[in-house]
Image (cartoon, rainbow, N blue to C red; front, side, top):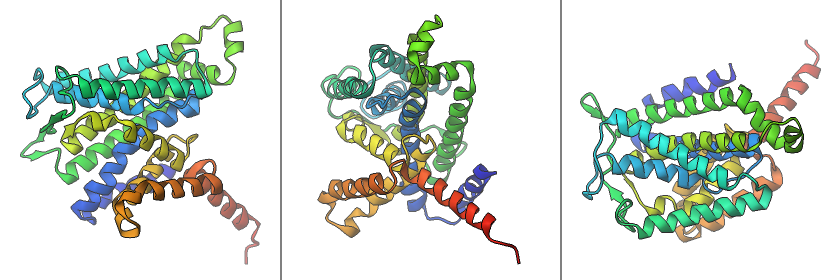
Length: 321
């Protein structure tokens, strides 16, 4: 029921909003929320904060550009039914490799390892011209056509992003209830006990990172279609920090809070110029992040949950007339 309260208005919004709000605010928020969801998933159920999620999204974005139409003349064009699963598979493989490298790390050490991987991937894409076209990257990355309309049009791309977001949330909920998902949570809570039972912790960790790669890759493909390009700027230090900020604003321990954080971040990003100078956006987002961390350490979603719970308790205590 609680999901219907959000889903029904989301399905009706394209009929009342302008293309600007639909594309630049809602669609962009959904795409960033999907990528941030991959980070929140790892933080919530594995207990690892990964700074490599923008890189995983970039792997899928670069793959969809390299194996699809672009205007730079680099790549091997493949049919849509081949390049789409291939891009997702490459993102999963990249996630599994990161999980393998970081499998023995926790806390600040996992953060530093994944950050190093993310920064290394950024410089690699900037300097490699055979696969990534270096600094310029790929342009003209157009989404496939939907009949006589392109999926890149505001309404189709919004519904596509909304559908992918719903699928990703459903996959996360299904994964955490599966035996593998329970093993991942056991690694988070008591890895020593798991080893004492003779259950290795390496595979659940790698599987969790691979699954996060699938989610991040889905957002990366949508982002490449939304921007109609992908470059080293898509995987740089800025996007790495942006994904973390979005997750923290929404609630790092609440996967679906990633979408709440994404909406707040995108609105601030678009309308910051009306509040302060555009060059001071980082100052503004820093102040907002600090205020949220102080007032709601568990994010805006947990704050909303607490408010609703308080209102229900107050309503239950109020005597009926």
